[in-house]
Length: 616
Image (cartoon, rainbow, N blue to C red; front, side):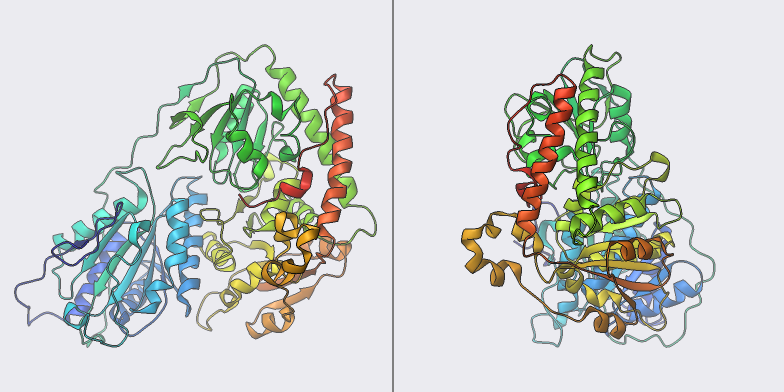
């Protein structure tokens, strides 16, 4: 439906229309220029320090104002020619702010586009931001109201274009008054983006109509930055609820769980099952290959309670655990919505505290998990490191994880949201707490969109080297993000690409079963033979072709300077068979560890490595 001002309403976003002035001020500067300058000033006053611009004609007043504001030291401007890239660079910048804020939503970041298809190209980034809770501020330039619906060039219905994916939306008419009117709109928009009232941060959309003339007659010299505006207070942190002692408990740390997950596990003496991008995969309680142990009756089968932090999305065994009858599920969600796919949560709280006293068998419970986890980890390491073993995703993930834990390497690791992040989850040993990397993935919607762009935004926002690791399809999907404008800042970004010529993840799923071989390759394998060296050179990035495991170790030990692509060739023809063989080796090691610890030997792992990497 539409309100009286013509703004489309959605279930979670309520677009509004600011009042149109009754008379023009002939003595003022051009109305579009005035609106742009005041908008930029108000954004800065409300805490925006980074803006990504995808240039165009209708957004010209905003571009001029942003450039002047950057020259005055008010903000950093990042220019990208591709709107989808621009959107995910902004996502990376918001993630950088969250890292600096130690898991809090972080500072808002704006992305500015012109009208038409430019706005639609931001949709993937908006969807990632809404599901990941990132404070992204979309500012789309638009034609004035009198040109809409007339067939005017680059004019479409941009009002409500993102539907329910935004927390707040406003359609600002051309010539709308500034002052307190505009300040109120920005106050509400930035508060919604940061979740200051809703405790549910996410993207917001300002659709700004601008009427000709679009070029300022006189330059703008902004002067001193505007005084900060802090109208809406931040929500108070939730009061922790104490958990009762008794049930055999594990802590599951999904994406963006943060250090609270590790702190809880260690305070309570419980096993920690932490995904690599949880921010908690470190310390003695973390169990590296945890998903291989969940089918064991003496381990996963004996779990009575699960405390969930973050958003677990990587493995079917964890999903099955969270859906299992008879297991008490406690979800810790400090902000917004909470993960409970199976609808089994017994309690949803903002924060928890460990029991005042541990249960009698907590120490034995933790020891059993540690012993089995160590045995599985050792078996994996030995098999993956065998001389002559071909390079594959597991070997690459193992070396990348080890390099990420070294103090001299890049502290930021971005993982593509396909097989690579699952391989990291399987083989990455828990990191030393003092050298834990900042591991990031776009797990809001777990798409392969914008992975290189996100890594670029992180490098810009943190001003430090970033290593990104991904498959060839994820790389090709966002290869345009390697482009750097001649007038834009260089980033220290190394993109490590496992090039197995297609979609390797599907080979480990039901689609890769032998009886489907005749159908598999074209519609799932999607083979490709792109010359990655030529592609990297075209975008001005260095290229290195890895020859073997030793060469890979050497490359990962070198400093990350500028933009580079490290290509790691691999085959996927026998991926399914190799994973099954590795599962048998790990099974034997775990059984031996359980026998040595007095636990009953159990049947083969159900599913093993074959189904575990599956997409949920």
